[in-house]
Length: 497
Image (tube, rainbow, N blue to C red):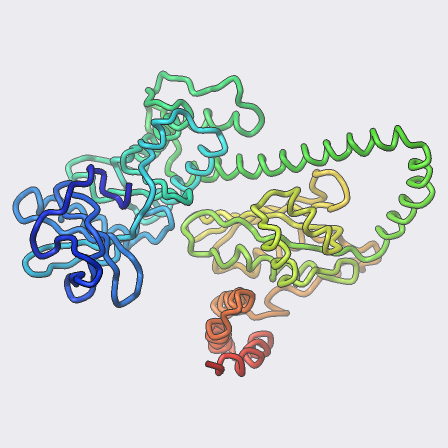
């Protein structure tokens, strides 16, 4: 199935937009080159090429009459909502207009199938439910923060792309006379999660507690149960609260995987040592003393990219936290790995967020400490969680840190997070304070954001885009020394054709 059209494709009919050979392709509204017809379900559904931007889109052209007008009104409402809420999980509407007496809507081209089609194969595994449920809750949370309610959420209007991205469709489907609030969507979200776990529609009396669920996965049915409470006041107040609990499960699963991997490593190592007395002697007389001596010297830190969940307004901080904490945590007893080298190694290893794979990667670069973290966007606020680990020992964090505050206070949040994670030197003077982020970078949030975006463009070898970002950083704060340095470094390369 292609696009958000849920009807079975039919052969193209005649008329001005009929399917033609590539050399004879028609251009609609002076902008959209028609490639093929994808189907009809009350509207003409066409795959087209936007000649201005160069992207492939879905073009829907509405028939005249009451039925066509109703479809057009619904898609226009969906376009209004999509314009107000920018989130990866919400189906994007690019254009709405009229041409030659025909109303049309241009939207993101989706290739894949609906959740309803995916569920025809049976229940989903908890990992898949958690992944799709988190994407769904994130999209709904972004809408709820804008005061927008879907009101008609079901597997038929949830689309899963071929690369595993979830898209919420039909935001314009609810009728004005239907009373709905965020808790209405929460109830529907619970129903969708329940169906993914059970493989079939359920009711509030159904139990989704699978005896096979263990560890963090056991929390999934409890989240469903709270979503499906008959009393709206007993449910989550909005999808943002559901997202927080789903993210907590994901964090705990990462920790559990880390602990399991370290336990397996410990058991294997113990067996090998028990079978080789000579090896035990070497470890006792040489390896352990050497490690203890190394532990007394400077530690080497690696900060892994943070996961970012929510509205998508602060995704730059995912990789940006690598740069920021590498600056603020570094000191006399802790040397930070250069972020570009670290990120290059993680990309080469195709790191997917798994703690053990991350530990192996940073260990190859010589790190003895590493930081894992996540950011949850809740309206204008950020909830940041980070853990500091010893790369040479079991998966129990050396330190946990949690901070929360307005995104405009990112400097204070990073400083507070740093203070909680930092290993204070034994010889530190009472009351001694490390320099804050603003003291060593800039006190301007726009300048900091542009600077971090510039660094990310440099790593992707997009010099012109990087130079433009550093220009924005310096414009926001002319005294930003690091920004000026990077601007100078990219100036010559940006001039090259």
